[in-house]
Length: 459
Image 1 (spheres, rainbow, N blue to C red):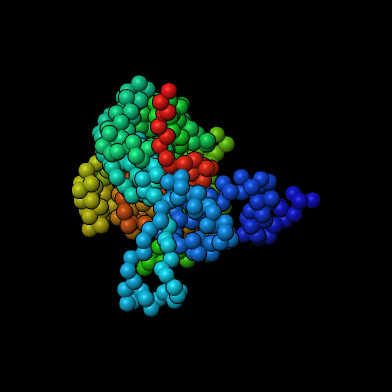
Image 2: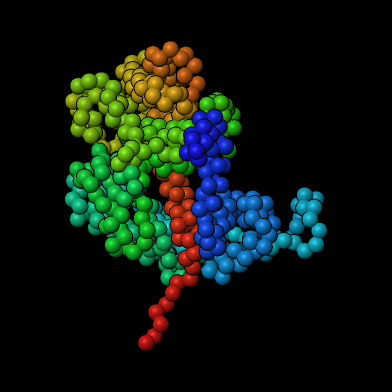
């Protein structure tokens, strides 16, 4: 009977279903220790989301009693996970806003020295290492160039270890220990976020990155697809989409479903990160959508993956460049295109008809066909384009919309917009760090671990 009721709720009202699941989940917490750990995680997530807050605001945000908040925050302070902050002197303007009487409230925030998290990004011909403190501040970043297509497993391990060792040596990891590694890859990763299954940038297959990194550093590791991390970054920026350049996509997001939206990367490759019903869509054993390697034209242009006719073989930067320069569709994809040269290509395409403009029109057609196929399965959902090619979106849009209209929904073009506020690499780092820090909140410090570095006791 309970199962039938849940199914009915899911069909009628997804929000009610989520709330019911929360109630049932709470009902499964049977011991005071389990409840305490669950509430620790809630408070840490609240501080992560909303920043510095008083105990009173934490109680209002989480629904926890004042006594519970007081006890849990005291434990977290003792464990070194959060810290008290002395409020700044009130200015005349803030004094008007603050209507509370008495002494200023003690504020709490995440302790930046509680932990370090590392983001290792493996993209075409580069490894980038970024370190963040527990508050989310970036404390180190370095990018190294290498030839990914020729990497052996031993060489990949060597490069990953060298990059992370150098990063940790540059900061004081004795007081702020490394607690988690987020490894981001261009390609398909396992559904359980443990390894890289396949990538167009390397011949390596089934690389157990979690085991490799855990074996050396002894910390938890998650492996993610690059487009999925971009989707995580933007999904958590939804509240900023009401600016003038995002009004259309914000309206569609509200009207269609606030939990369904996708990010399409249009850059060194083509990828898609898709939030479906509030979660990243994954496959039965892999990270899910390989949008860039869906078929656009049978036996068509050569793709970096080695196959022919992929969307990427017509819509990525190397595909647009190849067509604009009049090269054969059999020509091997170039490894990299200087940003200024690609920007010049866009300007030529905007100024006059020719092979440059035609290249972007074909790219738009490829995007449109891929989205039309997805819309036919999942119903239309808002999609944001990010990456170097988005400056030419107006050139791509007519062909994109024509292919979307194949299914007789003339307004589908309104679902596709451009997010041009920052580079895709910045979004990858942002999404990966957010996932990594949330892991610390929920699985490590929320689970009761102290931030204190334990020193061996002398025998």
